[in-house]
Length: 338
Image (cartoon, rainbow, N blue to C red; front, side, top):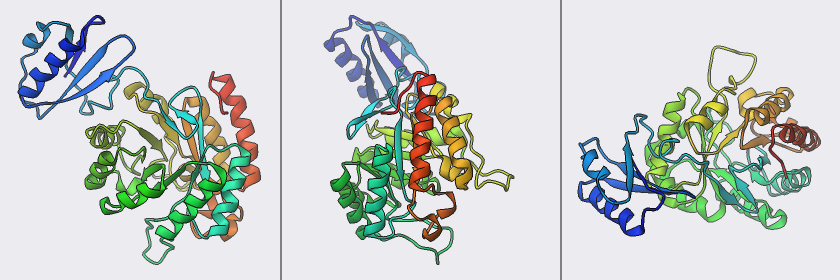
């Protein structure tokens, strides 16, 4: 349930409502908009006297939230969530571009790529230091050494870093180096990890699971939001279907649907969605037209030598051309790419 306060409600009115809710054994989450405050009631389903709350000073009305995801829903927070990453605002009219290799393979590789994607127009550097792979014999990443190389790339270019964290115990370490914690598709229902990144209060990029319903995806975001960490970006990276010509099936429907259901910004990942560099540009441009708040794209200076996902990585020149094309589409839909 949410308690919608009147526009003229005083702070003492809001505090009284919060006290009443907490005394009943519930948690409270505030959403303070330009015109009014909304008090979210989070609990285990025990009855709460709605009529009693509506009679309190400053309360306009109480509205039940029927969706299982409460804090992630538009009912709780009608306005889009926005927050800064570096010099750019996520969730605003500006479309944020994240680019870089699937894996950090060496110091020279990540530094070369970082300078190339910045020159092409990227705002954030992506790169995996810890890599969950289907095969135990595949390259698993450089670990903390890779994080150090990413930090050096940030120092040289000014680009914030997004990189994956795989388990709760690793969260403090990755937070030391990364600006954004990525939760990969395989970990979307690793609830201990979701709790840990929520408690970290670090910005989070939450990828959709390969077979996850949108509701399940939003419920994973709910775990993070329940700790008061609202700096979450949802990432559509394709879902597993029967089709074999692409790595995944890019659910572009998810972009407008999520924007209707939730206030959280949504990022598109056309690289993992298609799995082939030849299709990345088309899926990326479609994402801009569909209303994505950002994109995360794999870029590698020599994809044929990449230790992971080279087949879906763009070369820097192709990425630079794609940025030019996406800018034109962004302007056509009243957005912009700085």
